Picture 1: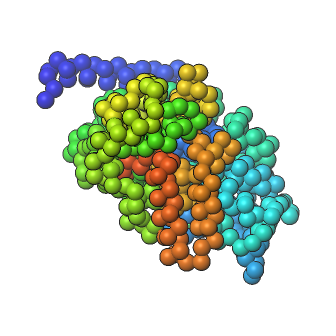
Picture 2 (picture 1 turned 45 degrees about the vertical axis):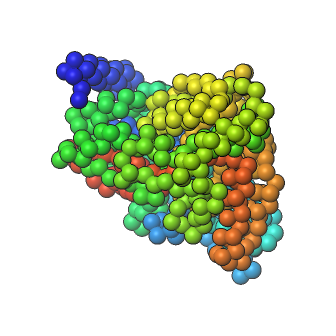
Picture 3 (picture 1 turned 90 degrees about the horizontal axis):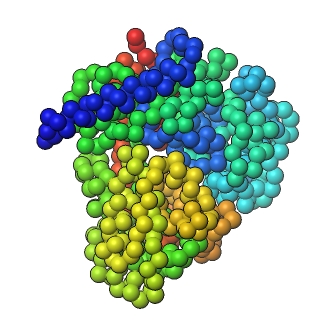
Length: 536
């Protein structure tokens, strides 16, 4: 139990932090924003605002505010029209997308098929499912101002699932002049056709991001369902404010200074559940997979024996107990493609799920020729769901015999730094931890971390594995679910053998919001802020 003195210091710190946020907000907003405003604390600070440049979920969330998609996924896992309807030719080789009427960019110009073709190409250059789709694609063209025609070399059944997937990276549409920006460079401005407009003049990384209602947006007529249906904006303004201290954010929600808290600290959830003015609910019921990723380019993890030693040293229960604490919200699971799904298997996962690998880890490390090269682990301290993993892993690696350089940082620095291919001594890294929405990693094509493309086109860490890439190609050509299961099992076996990444279990994360908010939508890409109303 906290002493009176500690509680006093915490209350003072919370009040001070709220005052700083309020003061900075007032200073940045010279004109009072009339109408309904939702104030939210998201799971991370927003710094990178190009949703194709990074897989970070906070940037995906920003993308859904500003941009829209041709098609998307509803709560029944069905692909639905959003900006466009589609037809498929009898021979399954031609997909024709027709833009609906009334689509405009935020600068007032009409959305054209040429814009969308350029957007699809930029997205497909870096997204795992997009890259796989392009291997089957003969051409994507604008055949008239409202028609996008995609022609395949041979039938490929995942075209709609790829373009319409709800989570990172999402195939967001943007004007051609922006979409022609190379995907390894960030777009220079935020012009979408989505339900909100980004207020660039009020953007303060580390403080807040502001969105206002796009009054020109024409929602679809269907009810909102996940990221599908009518994106009806019922408020005038949404502000994402940064509060890295968990207690401060909880105090702000309870006092009414904020309306929505995406990821309250798990140890504080019981406090929120006892407040009758709040709703506490898991919006993403499919949850997350948490994982560790190594850098394959530099020592010591360019050596597979060292990677195996590191994996054997870790176990999921230690990580999940530190990260979540309450078993109600976590699941020990060694399946790369998520437990309780058709592709789930426990092949290769014994040491992680049973926690019995430390002796073998020490043995492997001794055999590997490891020379004491420090392992640089990036450790973000500002995101509730990413604090524990680096600390627990560092302790396990040290016990196994590694030297560890645990570098404290914030998550947005990790997001930027993990893209660097420089050596660790020059600002690079050896290991980081992240979380994937379970829907994003439930098969070998959507699971971006499982790829083996190396330095060109590969995900951060740049694993190179021709066998996995061949198996992925076999997977998309498989004639039955049974065949897909066999191939997925082979991929998982290879991924564990080569330690492509370390799956550290699954969890759910509750969100909390004041009951003055109604219409909050669930789904694998939450939170979204259309359909939400706020009572005064």
